[in-house]
Image 1 (tube, one colour):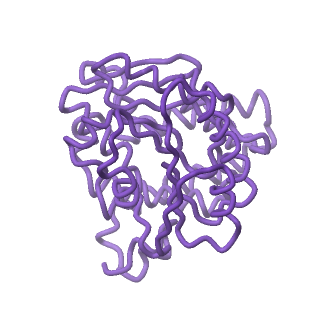
Image 2 (cartoon, helix red, strand yellow; image 1 turned 180 degrees about the vertical axis):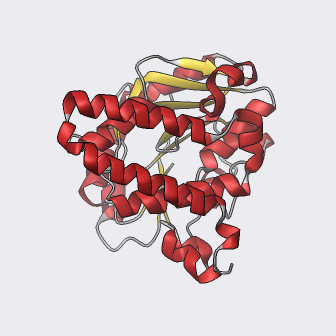
Image 3 (cartoon, helix red, strand yellow; image 1 turned 120 degrees about the horizontal axis):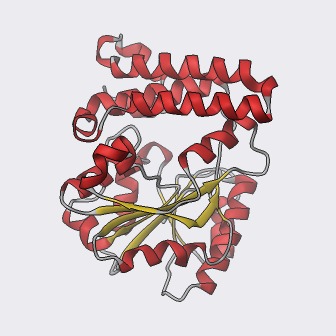
Length: 301
């Protein structure tokens, strides 16, 4: 399933790569696209590749709810989710991800994200830090070693065992973001495992501005505030953030030292945004959509 809204040229490239993977797959693969009232040619792009297309009002899009509705009642063994800007790096990437489910304990699997070819050094490091070259399968016994990384996953390219997905009720609805981590955490607490498959690659990255970084990390803070049980069970995200900063400084010093001042600005705004998000209930209601990357989420609060 792929949610799409004004996908543009990246979606055209992603759709072509997905169609190639669908044809090359050893499995029966259906592709469903949910379009949130795009104003460009996103729907035509999907139909040109033979994908099923459903339309919704853009105001009705919900990270968890839209994905739940798209797979509800589908007679599938595995549900695969991609985003419109995630380009499968090779036709076999899809099957490589699905191979993780040969292990009956695996409830969730996610692939490796490589940076887009126009990624700046900050965006390229983020992908290298979060998506390494070594695959792993992690469960509850690994949380003392991996911490919050135990339940890290990304719906930019992730797959879910349908039986577990339906048993646990799918993704949370009316959730600001990180519906994927929420589900992975629930699955691991129920005895399931999360597989990271480094051979299953997509190209996916963002050249965020400093302000966009602030807003995204505000939203991450909101998620952590609303679901504190994840931090209690798997460790706080702050420790992982410190590891990220140290890694980024080392990489930029070695490869792109002129980007260090920009990285410092990004990280300062990430920390500020995250801390404000963690305390969002103390902020004036009118401030929240202005600080967020998801202003529509706050309607009705």
